[in-house]
Length: 130
Image 1 (cartoon, helix red, strand yellow):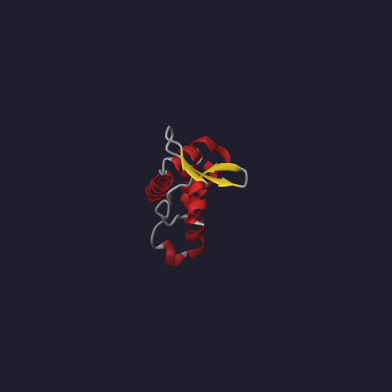
Image 2: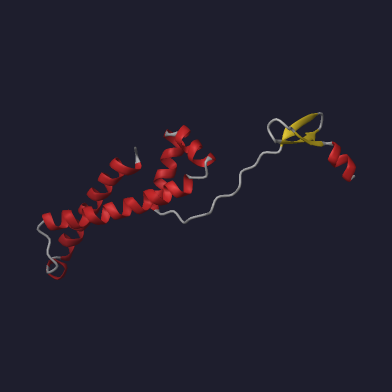
């Protein structure tokens, strides 16, 4: 059995690719080494989805060069930093105070949600969907 398996396999000297016989045809034994798994947050997943659907060439290049996870990690870290900075900036420009948490909590929560949504929209347009 082992000799038959060895007969059904060969390595092309020119390319270095190993081939295995499947039925009447020789098929290349191609595979990718697995990349290190990293946990993706909302922004990493949004970027991944955007690359898959709208930037297929860029996605394929990053994937084949094993740089996709690194790219997604950088994007999600940068997005989170930008959102934090934008929220603080927008909060300082608004009329919100910490006292409003106790005196008018619904107004405070509504304004904070609007600020967060505005910051996210900016980051999504400038960082994720480009």
